[in-house]
Image 1: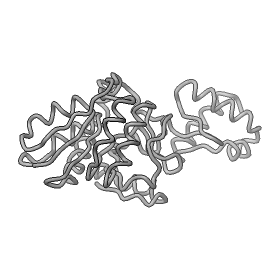
Image 2 (image 1 turned 180 degrees about the vertical axis):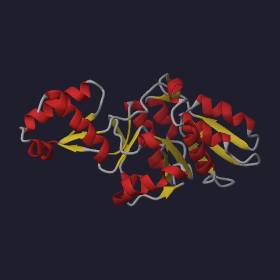
Image 3 (image 1 turned 60 degrees about the vertical axis):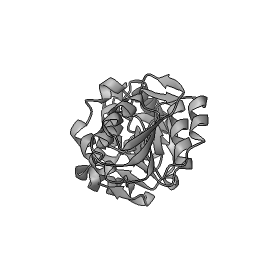
Image 4 (image 1 turned 90 degrees about the vertical axis):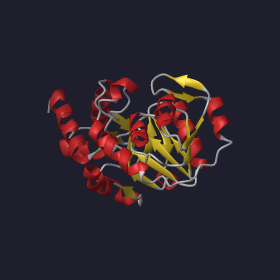
Length: 250
């Protein structure tokens, strides 16, 4: 089989199965594992998958800058925002992550909600101005332009003073075997810090993030309490994540 044919076959397998095991594919194709590893390396360098130990998984599509992400799965993110907003109870203190889906959570908050929202996102803070009953706590630090959130050691130290009832966290990839990941190391530190301090942690996940993997781990499945997704994505999420024991809210 020619190299290009193997590459096409590998990408087809990835779309169908959600992962590639190098040893299994090498046996099926009658080639060495080294050959398959070279193929996976070439495909990874071309930005078509992410290599992991023993094989490969889909590359997270949500690594684009904030402005570009506003056009990805927008109706789906609005649905997720509606579901997530319904999880916030009056009187709670909630940490709301940055990102385009978090802005949709704000858009679907009940007009008369009285609560406290902590955020490191200037966009989320500004969106909350329309909710007079919501007290807003803004977390300081260095602005990460890619995601328009504060990050770094100052942000993590600032978060140490909070103990939210609930945190709603964005992610770049959710994979049953590789956990919950994001594309920025400092963002991962901030997300990990607030998850550890929250009474409950929910991950906001649109369909392009399910089964994908990014470079930096946010949390394992033991660390979170559920995944919030759109109703039309719920069946896929439950099937993909069934082995994790994670609750799906849709």
